[in-house]
Image (cartoon, rainbow, N blue to C red; front, side, top):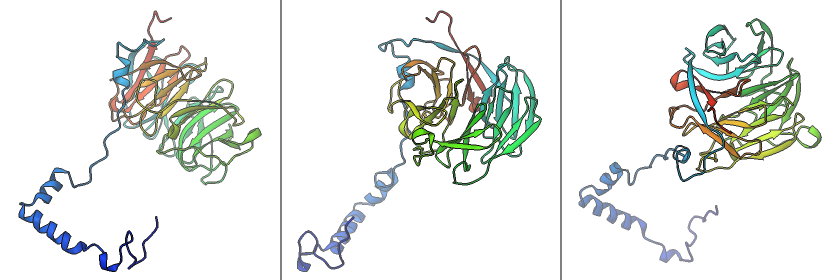
Length: 350
């Protein structure tokens, strides 16, 4: 902005032609006062007062049930709600035997595939997320630290250091195990770190050519950065500022990016969606979102396959963490309902 020097003419007018603002303003004030406090009435009604920002909504619920839209290739139904019994449900993971691990309150709680509570243990601070490796090692991520345990909760090792330098942790939001490596999503540093399973730093992702660390960072308007890995070690993350899902090679090369912003059942609404994701064995991706909370399944190239949970989740849910079991059932956290919802494909789907 160019600042006009004090005493300089405005719009070519000399000093003698400057607007006489004070008398005009005084006259307007007197006129409003004589009108019986119109200005006060306007302010009270909100016409002169600042208006709150409207809540962002999307058309997913309407679109999913719109008979004029073509049917989606897959149909899912909610089969049950696993009651967790925790005040603060943060994240979930599923191991090779389909046991459910829940990060919440002050530790990790484990459930059988039928929803029976098996065991629980505490972490040194409130856990933010959880992952289970093929070895059975449980990785519980705190805000700036990772603690590892056996499947029975016996402590193994803790690692991680606070900082902005490569490999430093500032605000961890997700963790994924692709042993012998572990991915740690760090909203504070706007990237995903790759470590060995013992906590040795390997690289930050996004990365430059040939896997060398790059300077690019993700665009993240709010603290939602999730990550998942497939059996080949490829990394999947939600680039919320772009409303996209991105796939990277284990060395950090961008392989695929898809997604669009806006309304409609195949789009991601608002500023910061999708908030969470999970990957199925065939490379298709399940996403969760906030605003109008629903779960969606896309194929590996981003074509929408299914929408589930329409009208089921309370709007106050701020993100739905996701996991997938060996049979393809989809698990989604529902903190407002105090549990984890399970979705399965309807029989008869092609």
